[in-house]
Length: 75
Length: 439
Image 1 (tube, rainbow over the protein chains, first blue to last red):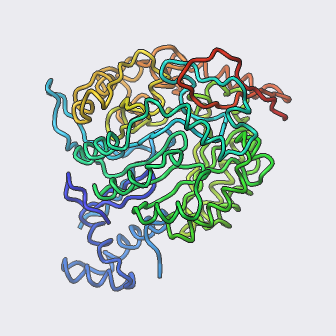
Image 2: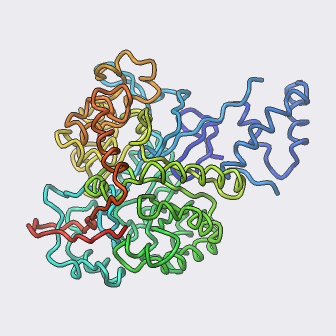
Image 3: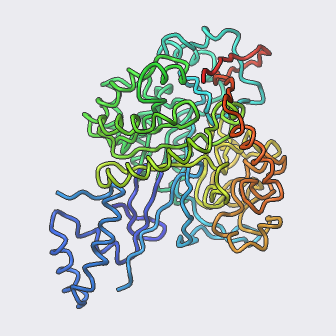
């Protein structure tokens, strides 16, 4: 993940493409460090005092989108 | 928490994606008060020289005002060893290209403007020995670096040198899935070299994308091309139908696939994309003549992309120099990039929506597709400010339909193509190489 010096936002760069992450996506992607999806959901639920079940579908959807674009890998 | 917004931008000439309108305008204003966005990507066309002769090349058919031509196809290396061809053309044609120092200034100015990604392209960028130096410089300027290449001229040493310079990604072109057709299309024996190069790229740990330009002669081999990409361990595959600019426009009659071919190919690409999700990201681009709405070309003129060509002209779009002859181009040798991006007539000419004619001006899609492609409007209607004639609402749509009708109404439609030839410094008025297309 790069930081866009113009906007200070996180961006993912790939050949001929740029994905700009909003705050939510940024929070999710910055936790992609080898832990499980469930652990990411738990961490976000705790940090934002949000309902883990409600959060889970957002997280899964984001991660699956990035996975399809080959920007993250399941390890 | 809001639902995540993951928004993508893609390559100008290739994208059929719906545009996204969530990008911040962070580039300030012009002296006349117009709001100017910041650019995201620089396409650095460091040379037009190339050892291949693909008839769909989007490079200009004219260069430095001179018609590109060669006295003898063998002298240009066609059908000969492409590596030798590269060194012979280097001797005659690098006059006028920007130096490494000039490119470094361009890269620094681009990074200062907000550019995040640089694509080294051409021609064949490997034809320049200072490529590694430029890649290293771009990485030090914190840009994501991508090399768009035929692979000819890339051996193990050079792959390692590029890797150590920090190159992030290589997009390797293939003409087909096997040598005989691929080499015929390239006009050079290249396919086997590309296979070797792909393995070296993968071994060096550089991200590999495989790009196929699709046209009538190879479109039916799509499943085998996808299999090749799988075997090569590519992370991305681009199956892009030829878009008709430059040499491809000249060779349109030989390249445009039939409707039946296009529909079948789309189905195959979609199935493969689903099957390979997470393994290979597949990107299929329809030939836009078969669309009813225009592509959101460049995601808007002067919005996100800039191209610098080998002699330093700065272009809103790589094909604009040849497609829009009255566009007054600025050059990095006389102006800085920041001024060109913000203030130049060429970048402001089709910025925003005020320039639009009807039916674009009152169209609810005007900030979705931006009226389509200016180069296509120029090439097909003679006026770059017209609505892209691909649009079903364009008064010129009949011109596109006529092309499709000619092609699809004949069962044995054949065409000749003209191979791309390397630019020469001196203008030689010789006949160009043609080859028969067997159907």
